[in-house]
Amino acid sequence: MSALSKAGRPADAAALFDDMLAHGVAPDRAAFSLLLHIYSSHLALPSAAHSVLLWMTRLGLPPSPIDYADLVFSFCRAERLPDALQVLDEMRALGHPLTTHVYAPILQAHCASGDIQSAKALIASMRLSGCHPDVVIHNIYVHGLCKAGDFRAAERLIEESGFNGWAPDAVTYSTYIAGLCRCGRVEDAFRQLETMVAKGLQLTVVGLNILLDHAAQELDMEVGNEVLERCEELGFEVDVVTYNTAMDHFGKEMQWLRVLKLFADLLKKPITPDAHTYNILISGLCRAGKFRLAKFVFGCRGFVADTVTCNILIHEFYGAGREDELGFLFSDINAAKIVPDTITYNTLVDCLCRSGRRSQAANLVRHIDDGYPAEPVAHLTYWLVRSGHVQEAFRLFDDIVAKGVALDGRVFANVIKAFCRKGPVDCADMTQLCSVLDRMLGIG
Image (cartoon, rainbow, N blue to C red; front, side):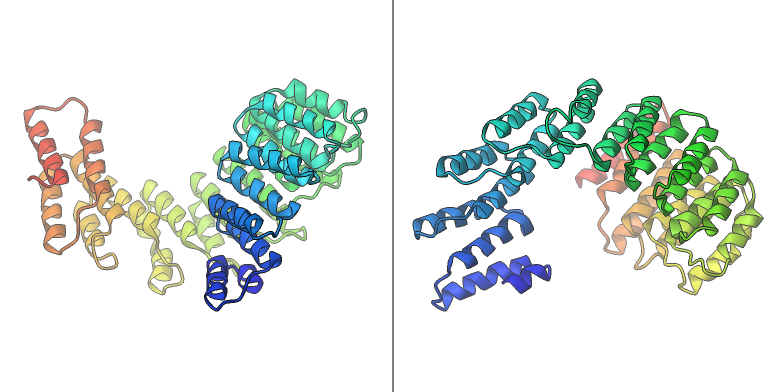
């Protein structure tokens, strides 16, 4: 059972317990605890886990504090907080030690629901029961306060930490900085960053990326670049996601020279660019009209283009009216170096229809896989209706039904959306719309 559970096969582990019973092998406490843990942590079945706990009690095998802790976690994850609190009361009544590990999921549940008063009361009860809240507990609380927008309370909590016997760590400050950024208080986040540096703490990569992301959005792009450079000078860990964040913002601002500079800086460091890095670079170059350079990056040795790259190039080249230059991409698709996905086909249908090539779009949809996949058909019918070719949409429906393919609800939804986008309709349009609704309801 343990091996199956660790191998990611919890259902098989639970089935093995049933097999053990069927062969007359009486489970001991360890077997019951393992089954309870499987139900709680792996299968997310708190009611089943609770049944195991009652089963153990009836057989005279008292559950351990770890069993109760597993059950508390499971109820909290299932958003059944009253049940979790009842289990906590049972632990207290049985005299089991209440550790921060038991309190943490309950506190997290209070904070997730925005019930800060209950979270505060829970921490107070921890102290009364002799369980001293540690930095993990306070980090959860700081996150809850930030989510609720109570930054004064979060700052006061951190400032008074020394009096309350705990020390903020990198996660504490990173959580607070990220919360400030998400609310647009980037300047305050910078001040907390300075405090953090003064204490010799390292901003987590996640916190740094969120800070950089919001700095680039809320402040001048130069500031975003300065944040990156300053963090590197301070010895903060900068990863490929950090560079991707900065490059993405510069690309959206059409500052492609800065994108290139960041990419060049990245190559000089012991950081390996990933597919997302190249996709951001190619997207930024295309938006700046540097299509020849984008094609050069696509063909660079060491870069393995993926489906996202394909979708970016199709969208940008078609949008710029340069679809005739996409031979380099389609040769890779035909050679199966890139496997198109639904987004690829949707993008192609949209681009072809926008450029007035409805017959090519219809032919493409007809030959995808086994023909007429739902989403590309939905996109095609949307454009047919928008362009006033409703009868072509109905002929498409007839072809699909004749092939034995069911009309998907997304198809009808897109047709209705297209009618709505056309604005006020006349009687003929209303008749056509009613025909679509009849098809959807199966009465026409």
